[in-house]
Length: 81
Image (cartoon, rainbow, N blue to C red; front, side, top):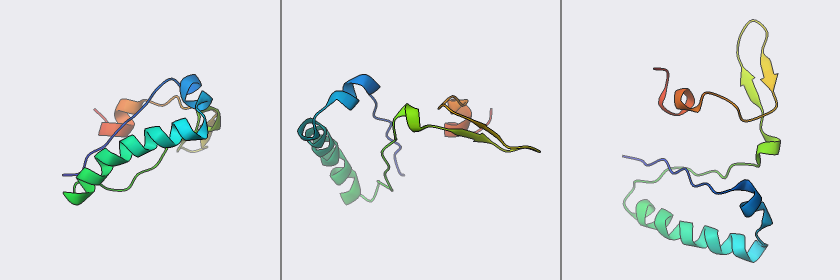
């Protein structure tokens, strides 16, 4: 079984961290990653971009592109109800 981690904090807080603070947070997170990697229970990782870089694309007759991370996340994470 692979695990999905959603680690989040206030975007204002995270964006205010110095490089050293950010590196320290990522190092602590890596301790957890390494334990799961050793157990073959951890897959690929990606860090999300700020919400200002977000865009939603919806497929249809004419694709709809919106600026913002506003999608029905329950459907995207676990599938349609």
